[in-house]
Every structure is written in structure tokens, then in C-alpha cells.
Image (cartoon, helix red, strand yellow):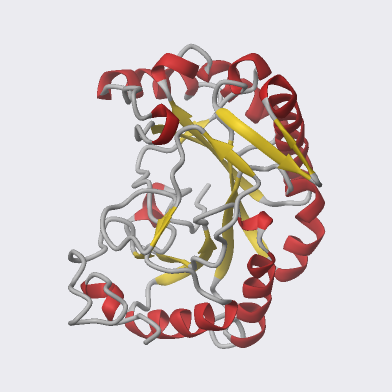
Length: 293
């Protein structure tokens, strides 16, 4: 089955570009390994971006990016917070659908979420034309999940511990099930933390497959925040975990753990940051050519 998305299909990974529009700064949960950063122009990891864009500036950046990189087919929102905790997400997709898609009908929409607000958002996401979604699920046992999440904010309440873990997990699995029934193509990201969920990955694979996920991406922990003291998995541990889960659900092996403002074909982002005096946007070489200044 060929799915033309560079983070879902290995053939597309080397042929199709994507752009992450960083319009979503706020998050409704706090993972113990997550440190979100704005005004970060170096490195490559989830949760960081050079700046936060308004939907209008995101539209401008997309227009220029399409002129510079004709291989872009995926318009994505991947943070640096949770897209569904930000009104700008749907506003951006709607604006792109109205202003850009008529001239570029091959563009597809994608976003990443923790899944807390997914089920409530599906009608609006379907309306604007989102096709692909990624949900990060790091545990399907509340007893394990309680050690991964510092808090979950739902409605006007903030939950902690087991209560937070149970709420998040219930919402995540409900969202995946409903999304799969609606025809969305779903990838699940799982951060592999050997000392926390290392013995739990097969159970996660079984649960997300039953819920309707298409593919699983086991990602190594980047030790940050409250989990800065933990170690990432070794290459051998990562390979073994994927091999154990592969008979259950298709595995993804090419993840670059991209920034919230990544642009281009994965792995082809060019250059390092330049000095602010040289470029007001302070981006790498390819970013300079598509910045909104």
C-alpha cells in the first residue's frame, strides 16, 4: 500500500517534501520529556521553532516554500505545542484550503497531536480536509502513563497522576478509533524510554492496532526536562523493540524527529543557522529563502 506521505511510506520519504507551519504554541498536557522552545534556530527535535506564525504569515511562508521546493506535498502542523489546543490550527488549514489548494490540488493536510481533544475535533478536521494524523501514545497502562505526564488540562481542570493518565488514555484511544472509522490515516508515535515504558511497547502496539492505527513509529527518548537524567535506548534496543512490534503493526524506521518548522524532503534540510545580522529570520540556508521577511 503506497501512501504518498514522507512519514508514512518509505518510498515517499525520499521523494516528497513537507512543511511544518508553527502556528500552535500552547499545549494541553505536559510530558516529562518535553521542553518547548521558541526562538530556537538550531538543532532538530520536536517542540522547537524559530518563531510562532499567525495563520496569515503561515500562508505566506507556504506560498514561498512551494515556489522554492516543488516537491512539497504535505502541509503539516506539528506544534511546538498541541495543534488541537490552538485555534490557529483550524484557521490555518482553512486558509490554505481556500487560498492555496485550488492552485496546488495535490497538497494534503497532516497534523500531530497528543489525542486529548481529537474526538471532539474530528468533524472540523474533516471539513478542512485533513487526511493524515499522528497521535503520540507512550503508554496504554495508566500505572505507567502516570510517570510520563506531569499534568493534563481538560476543560477548566488540571489533572495529575493516575487520574490524568486515565483521562488521557481514554481520550486517545477513543479519538483513534473514531478517526479510523472516518477514514483518517493514523500513525502513532511512541517515545521509547527504557526505564519507563521499555517493557510495555508490545502492549502499546497491540492496543493501537486494535483501535485503528495504521503504522507505529517508535522514537528514541531525547533526555530533556524532568527526564533529562534518563538514558535513550541503544540502537540494539530500538531495533529489537521494532522487531517485536512489527508482526503486530507496521513499523516506521526513518523518523528524523523533526522540528515544528521543518521544511523540505526529510533529511535534506540544508545548512546551520545564520547570524541575525545576515537574515532577520535567522534561519538556515533553505529557511532563509522561504522566510516571511
